[in-house]
Length: 278
Picture 1 (cartoon, rainbow, N blue to C red):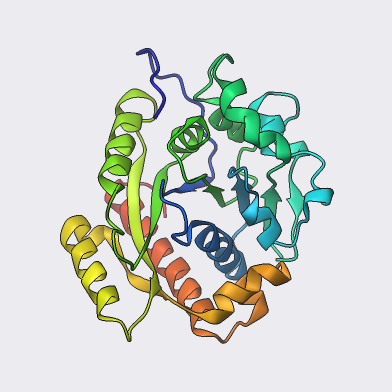
Picture 2 (cartoon, rainbow, N blue to C red):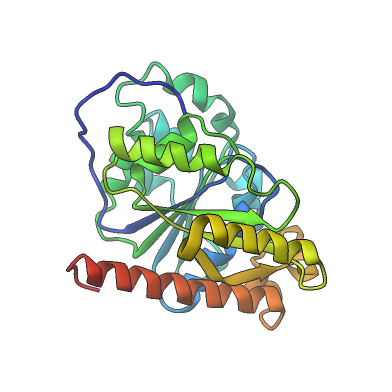
């Protein structure tokens, strides 16, 4: 996480529920989780916005939005050229909208350094949307730089996809430490919502070992729902579709529907515990 001078917290928040999907390790199913969790939430009637804050733009591509069809995007929001409402486009999923990634996002880390309120650019922009969406999901890049920091400052909570492979837990200590630092210095409401196990192969003992290690380390922060290693999940992005549109009946689609339901139950319990309306 970039160093920043200590300063009073002055943060604006949207009334939407904002979830940052983050892991500084690549190849863990982060973007796949962002796309399909957003689709699952939209499928059960929620108004959902996904923000593609990864310069690779895979979330945009996976939702069927080719690079040539992205006139503006989150880069323009970060540098203050375009209000976020003017960058939002529809997708082939009813109820799911997108702020796409454009090529300018590759240089955003450098440009943000000299801008005022550099850590709050996304939070400030989202505040202008009010209650237009029930859920905003931010697909973060696989790095703990200013793009990810902006997502964490704007978010209510963080969802960490964790692949069931060797070395899976390496680096997560740094991520949890970063979440703690962001909470202390920038965003007091930020919480680790949970860890979702991805690429789970029930035929492989290693998946069970990683799952046991994760549950031993994170306890009940690890979701009961696991995302299986499933060829249909891998095929769907090449067709520009979430797996729920590509093959609703496959195990991967069913897992993401269960994940969305479990996430909503957890959020409801948390809000009840805090004395907030469900």
